[in-house]
Amino acid sequence: MAEMKLTDSDLDARRLASSAAPSWYVLAAAKDLTRRPMGVCGRGEELVVWRGRSGRPIAIDRYCPHHGADLALGDVRDGTLRCAFHGWRFDEQGLCSSMPGEERIPNTAHRRIRHVRERYGLVWIWSGTEEPLFPLPVISELDRRAGRSPYVHSFRHDIGGTPVSRVHENAVDTIHLAELHNLSLKSIDIEVLDKPLWAPDDSRWPAHAEVGAWYGSVLEFELNHSDSVDRIARLLGVPLGRIRIVIDKWPSGTIARMHSDGVHRNTVVITASPYGPRTGSLYGISITPKHGRTVRDLLSHALISTKNHRVPLQDIPLWRTLGRSYDGVLVRSDAPIMAYRRWYAGWVKATLVEGDAGKVANAGASA
Image 1 (tube, rainbow, N blue to C red):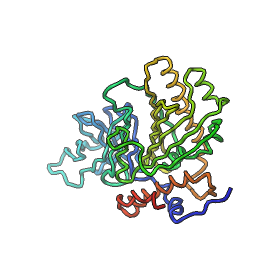
Image 2 (spheres, rainbow, N blue to C red; image 1 turned 45 degrees about the vertical axis):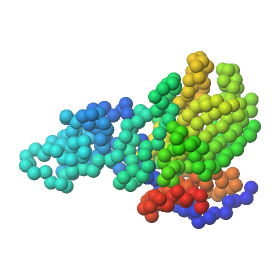
Image 3 (spheres, rainbow, N blue to C red; image 1 turned 90 degrees about the horizontal axis):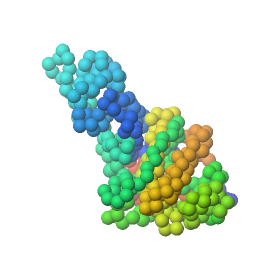
Image 4 (tube, rainbow, N blue to C red; image 1 turned 90 degrees about the vertical axis):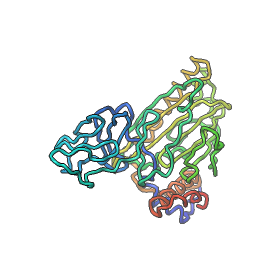
């Protein structure tokens, strides 16, 4: 198998793929954010998050502009964050609204609030540029207003300092599915998409595609009957047949929708959030639709969601050994990985290096 020839775009990918791209990242599970302030790190920034009077999460710099006290050690009063040291208060707009002993509050005491959203049981923050470049991606399976509510399983794993792109290129690394995850495959094919499969009026349409913050692929494979997952599925009356997974990505997340024999079986959402050079988390949501047969639906959810939960636990120990270098020898089977890295590096280059998100729409296509 011949070594791949590297283009200029490939060299950019090596240089920029370990960067944390401008995107939406998860700060915490929503259930962990109570009325008390919480100190968090988001993409290397130290922040404090609290719930305002309406319950909406608010995030500002963690340390008080007065003497640098940790605002996470303060408390929340009437929706305002109070510093424990001298009682300075910050409202839901980040403005210092009260300063004991002073009649006039200087403008330098005010803090910039971050763009924070609470959705799907998670608290998200935009990081990388001052204003968001695209809306928080929609998980349509969790936004349905009618029909049966799906079964949902959420999980989190520590990933240390693993770069965000390393986590998400996993979905297009076909060789490791068999070698690391022990899938016994009859066949496997992957197609890199040049546009989303979903129409703009479809609830699954990724709005971030409009600014070039989308990457997509389709993975199709069939398991041998000797494969443990296929064997268990057949015993449970949920034969998998030929599996087709439609993958929609944004720079810090992946939505993978799995179909078998034309039936939607599961959607898994994976996000990776770096907190510092050596710390980060993977958050996952496994969503299984209900098809009206309760026992079979529950068994299908248990089988697929358990697999979704456990698969990263096999990857993480190896990710931790890879470091932040992307200088390895590349061969032809790495082509889908390099296509993803080129797109990711193109987004980083356009938004952080060149400061023009509009350029990224064609970055992957021209690479």
